[in-house]
Image (cartoon, one colour):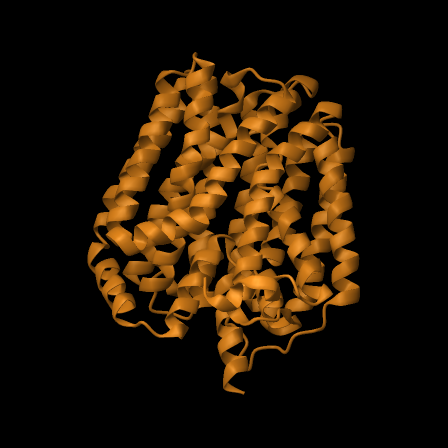
Amino acid sequence: MGPAASGLSLFKQPRAVFAVAFACVVSFMGIGLVDPILPALSAKLDATPSQVSLLFTSYLLVTAVAMLFTGWIASRIGAKTTLIVGLCLIVVFAALAGLSGSINGIVGFRAGWGLGNAMFIATSLAVIVASATGGFAGAIVLYEAALGLGIAAGPLLGGLLGDISWRGPFFGVAVLMAIALLATITLVEPLPKPPRPTPLLAPIRALRHRALLTMGITALLYNWGFFTMLGYAPYPMKLDEIQLGFVFFAWGLLLAFFSITGAPWLQRRFGTAPSLYGALTAFAVLIVLIGVFTDNRWVVITCVIASGIVAGVNNTLTTQAVMLVAPVERPVASAAYGFVRFIGGGLAPYAAGKMVDHWSIHVPFVVGAIAVLIGVAVLTTGHGPLSRADAAMAADGAHGSADDVAGEIADEFGGAPDAIDFEKEVGRR
């Protein structure tokens, strides 16, 4: 990042910034939090792996649909109110999941959790940017740090608390988010609403643009493989909760590191499209190795940890590519893209469960790898727009362009486009 993002200025922030950053850490923990307890949930609640996989399906499908409406909501009630509503929903539904005594109950409460998370991630970075000192780049670094810490710490916390009880991770999130909620209410100032509210159907209309739809379908197919791995890799490892937590902790560290450092380097060195071709193909190879050698826990463990490298690159570059080629406003493009890609993440665990029930646990990994490779083929149809976007970005060496790219990288989970536009709007006043 730029010099404004370095030094002591990064840590000399208002308390409101750290309150939201803490909430971001806990929110991003939710991605891998349940992985270490999946086998335990299956055993303790007498549920099949396909039933347990619905924890991902309900969470991600609701997140996908909610992404279409979060911009419309936030532009009308304000970013802080949207943030608070999202945090309240996470606290309530995480606690209810911990209190539930059935797998169906947990699946239902995870859906409510997904709604809250969609509202939170849609506005969290905008709030950090508005409140932070040191400019946009410094806010991006804080957001990326929260993202990386949350992704890495989620599985570890899930494993440690899950070793006490499978209910532990759910209650842990509820308590931590309740603290973040109180801090947000008391420390964060209301932000001005945008001059023009976001139209309700704008994200759906945006998918008529071929470049945006191509990137969305590519991400859908990639997420099919990604969430197949998250949902089913814990079972053949045959590890306890703490051991699984450390495996996915290592995976999360690599994912976070390569999201923030590896992806930008590859983009500058080889371009967006070639980097994605290589990373997606490597990811497909790792998934098919899990499928072929499912009976060898060490192969599975090694491939899962290594997949953090390519997953970090893929997550960042696919999101950045959307922002580079989309012919619509960034918040609209982000909402449309998030809707399509999370559909893939939501359907994959459910379909994988059906494959396990009808055939074997080898099959969903092989199918997931094929889906990712089909995603590579789909991506090649958008090579031209990506190459032109890379060329335009290389020709534009202005500071504003660098800030845009930083924001696009930080937007891996949906918050940066609004923040970029907010920062530019403030700068014009």
